[in-house]
Structures are given as structure tokens and as C-alpha cells.
Length: 405
Ligand SMILES: *[C@@H]1O[C@H](CO)[C@@H](O)[C@H](O)[C@H]1NC(C)=O
Ligand SMILES: *[C@@H]1O[C@H](CO)[C@@H](O)[C@H](O)[C@H]1NC(C)=O
Ligand SMILES: CC(=O)N[C@H]1CO[C@H](CO)[C@@H](O)[C@@H]1O
Image 1 (cartoon, rainbow, N blue to C red):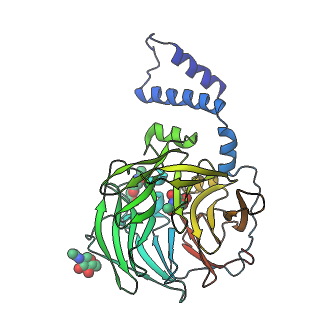
Image 2 (cartoon, rainbow, N blue to C red; image 1 turned 135 degrees about the vertical axis):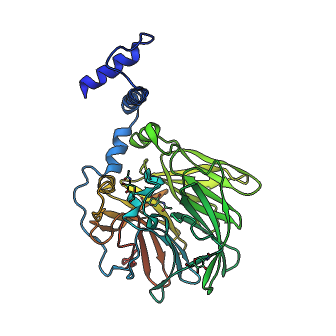
Image 3 (cartoon, rainbow, N blue to C red; image 1 turned 90 degrees about the vertical axis):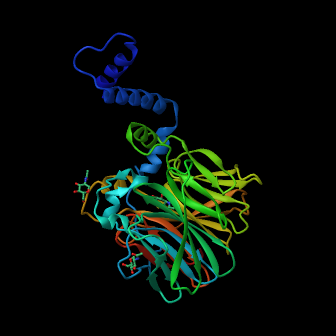
């Protein structure tokens, strides 16, 4: 390491002198450049503290907490990352993939083997009925057969209490897009309407719907792959953003986020909650009339938080995430091995006494039941908390809402 970096420094200060043998390739130069930038950044940022947090170092082992009564939703759902609850009907909209195939093709994790087996590109669109505990795999009428389906974040706009417009991030091999779908509660099929592609929407992650054709979408990275992606990822650079999309205007709404991930809002959309998972933080933002987002509050967390879900009844946000993301990074490299990623759910609510917000842990698991948890949607009416997972073959776990939560 020490000798390496001295070598690197020499190489870079050598200036115009031509490098002599051994042969140096262009790739080596990029590596050297990245390494130098990396060292500089590491020394000048509180990057180490963030890294320790979001890698889950020094946290010790996680014991199950408040998991009594939790059950895996039967039927073999896997990798159901995002769950959107339509509270009126008690229907949960979710997209589920193939946990093992996510290791081949999932651009958000820089997995881009375009020649992976077909199953990698055939995610399911699922509607789960919280009251009956049954789910149905929905046909997406109108979406041409053979279209890649690698779903990620969902956003739902209610045109009326029963007529929904659903925006679904889809990481097609030809590039990531947003599919516009429509569903009327009670229908047997979901209607595909159109596909939205935009150069500003390049690494879409999650969507907050604001109208029948408008939404905010988070881009989780600036760079898709290569050396710059490594740099962005390993040094937790705040290079990602949120885009506002509408047919009339599409622009950057918020910038300089350390891996913008899940995005949601309160009921009247006066506050927007955005996870910055590389910052281990939640941004609370306020939208302006011209659809840009301004800072309201910044809440630092002690884990790698993923997707926030809003609970209107308590005006609080449930945030789910990975306690030991390192197990995830390592686990994703091991094909054929089930990933047990310890997970945690916290509740963030207004602190009436002290001001600001308070963060309480409401559930934790060592990963044996709830692995790689990504979202927890709370249905107060039915007393149920649904927890989605990203890379687990126990796709959705249904838990009673813990006492007092
Ligand atoms: C990509 O997927 C195919 C099909 O499963 C496999 O044969 C190939 O080895 C994979 N390539 C890489 C680089 O993993
Ligand atoms: C698409 O596939 C479904 C199910 O296999 C089939 O019922 C339908 O007829 C196909 N549609 C077209 C346009 O090929
Ligand atoms: C919308 C969504 O699912 N966002 C994030 C949720 O968690 C997974 C797992 O870590 C992330 O990959 C998603 O980007």
C-alpha cells in the first residue's frame, strides 16, 4: 500500500517525462488518477466516519427485535424491492424479481451481464391484498411481449380514489426508463400506457408521483460503470440527484446527493423525504412552485438507509435499510448462495418535546428472516407492516405493527 502510493505519486508528478518500461496502459493511468483523487478526498472529508457507518463496521451482531409474528408471504416471491400501499383499498403494489438473477443484471448495483438468462429480465408486477393475505401476478396489458422487465422503484398517483397511475422504473437492457401504467381497483389487468425516456433520467431508482404524467425521480449514481463509478461508489461522493419530469419541463430538482435512493412525501406533498444511502442520512425537502427542492432538515442515521415510507396516521416516516451492507456487497458476488443481510426499520417522527425529529428503532433482524430489507409499508387499518427485500428469496415479510409504534 505505502509503496504503491509512492509509486503513484511519482508517476503523477513526473509531468511531461515519458514513462519508460514497464509498459503503462491507459487503464493504468486512469487507475493512478483515481487512486490519487481517492487519497486526497479521503484525507479531506469525513468520509471515513461515513464509511464506517454505512459499512456497518463495529456494530456487532444484530439480534432479532420485534419480529414475533412476522411471516414470509407464501408463494415464492423474491426480491420485492419497493412496496406501495394504497391505503383506501388495502392493496399493496409491488414488483418482484429473481434474487439470484439480480447478481447478473441489476444496473443500480453495477451488475450488467446483458447475456444473463431470460429470467433476469422477467420481473413480476404483483398486487397483494393485505386483508386476505393473497396476491396476484398482474398482466401488463399492452406492454409488448419480450420487453425487458427489471423493475425497481414505484410511484403512484391517484387520479381518483380508485383510479391509479403507476410509474415504474424499469432497467431495460437498452437503458433505464419509466413505464407509465394505469390500474383501476378491482380490475384483473394493469394497462400499460407509455414509456418515458429522458437523458436526465439515467440511473433511476425511485419515484414520487405528482400528477398523471409528472413525478420526481431519484438518480442513484452519476456514473453507470467503470473507474469513475468505482470512485463515486467507494468514496461516497455526493454526485447523484433528483429530476423533476413533466411533459412540459424536465430539470434537475435537487443536486449533490450521496446516492439518492428512495423518495416519498407526506400526504399533501408539502414535505419530501429522500434517502441518501451513502451519506447514511435522510433529507427532508420542501418543493417550490417551480418544482425544485430546498433543504428543510437533514437527519443523520447510523445505518445504510434505503427506502422511506410515509405513515399518514402518525405523520412519521418508516425507513428500512441494511445494517451490514458489507455482507450485501460480498454476498452479491457469491452466486448460488442465499444472502442473509441484517436489516433494520426505524421510525422518524416529529419530536414534539425537543423540536426537530426523533429516530426510534422499531424492528431489527439478523437476516435469517428479513434479509436485505428495503422498505416497510405500514397499514394501520389492518395492523400490518409489510417489509420488502432486495436480494432475498423471502421476498416480502408480513409483520404485526409492533406495540406502541
Ligand atoms: C453472463 O450470463 C451468462 C448466462 O448465464 C453466463 O454464461 C456468463 O458467464 C455470464 N457472464 C459473466 C461475465 O458473468
Ligand atoms: C403475449 O404473451 C401472452 C402470454 O404468453 C399471450 O397470451 C399473448 O397472446 C402474447 N401477446 C402477443 C401480442 O404476442
Ligand atoms: C425504490 C427502491 O427500491 N430503492 C432502493 C431500495 O432499496 C434497494 C436495496 O438496497 C436499493 O437498491 C434501491 O435502490
